[in-house]
Image 1 (tube, rainbow, N blue to C red):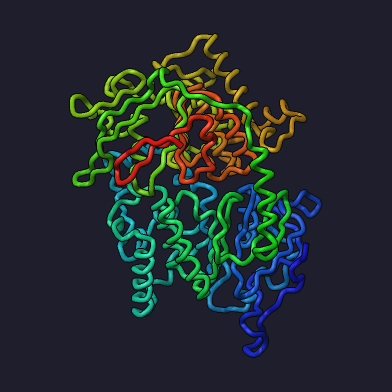
Image 2 (image 1 turned 90 degrees about the horizontal axis):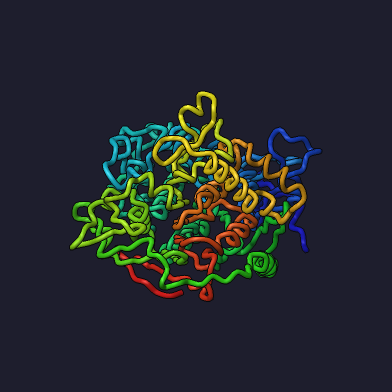
Length: 585
């Protein structure tokens, strides 16, 4: 394979090189290490030889989210490059004196979900469906211009501002009026192109996941970085929004306002305007032009697809137990009609793919399924009905429902407490009762014991079954399954179980929360964007594991993210403007 130039080109004078030959980025044959690791340690990425020239359009594609994201994090200075490139990885930016490099290069990542709260408390993510707290009333418009709304505070910054932007708008008050007018003009243009205009006066907590992603991109663009790194920007976006976003990114990149480098998954389509690709796989980075690298991508995707293939064929039984029965279910917020006469029956063993555009009501529908939505109580005959496990919703205690429905979602991930004393084993064990701790209060004072559904303590047989089941799930989905390594399985599983949940990588946290959803063998499992942040090996292991078991509803815009096909009897429930329809795959 042809290596791209080892030498970085710098622009020292106005007459030196033409703009078309500038090196925007240059890492000449180096290893990438975590800070604190010596050169004798195993590098995160080896022999990276990557040059981006002016006029080129690059995508970084990875079979694993962690390696791809590590390469992008390197560009922010969050990894150590050895030997370091002369003048830094951005030759042209290094010569600019207008602002520091860390304010010129932004990373907005959707590969790993962003925890909204870093403390140990469990945040009530169901509040978005009920009464909005005063501190959660911040609107999308206010979040874009918090300095003008008197709302500059950490919760807004952590929600939408890139992590590496340290001096949040400290210079804005000194900006000339013309600069503020230009920012307002740019804001209106971006909002229009990404169809966020109708959402500007809604609270942030009311936005769907896809709408929030678009808002984060707009916010980053308003800061006018020289280079914008977007990691998996297509994740969670519906089919209508993707071409709009890609068209906008293309026009911005073509005008260098800003330059765009995209991070994509192996299964993501490569935008037509991308001219060069960096493939991150197995700890190495292969780079080249589009035509040369597309063959590499095809071979890599074929290998991963073959490894993902499973021999288990699932069949659906039309006479099996009805778990969920919705009859003319409606959800309204004053004049907004979010769900309209929903009719949906889910039976034991069913496989469902829930589809719908961003803001179509998918998350609201899931909250009705779990019984978290306040209006789930109001669905009563004769006008409507909601039956869960053969009993009207109103007759269920919420804690009982949480023990019978396993859930993985962006909201749960963001809300999950990250207290350092919670181990991976304990996080998985919370899945039996759906809370945030597996132990009784007495256990925290010394003797450990399980929570029972009635608040008491479990008998010896139930305690033993739960402990055995946690280890069973760890053996089925633990680290040894991600790379196919069976050697030292027992030791690896035990070491992994003892790790602090808060300190493991974001993608691994997602896998642990999937284990939590499955550990109690719930009859119904809801998986909303479940693969976010997972490496390809994790996705492969999870897909194989999910082919057996109870009823599962997968929420995704991508067909190939559903673990089953037509032969498995998968069915689709599609939402469009609050109206649901059922189709076979």
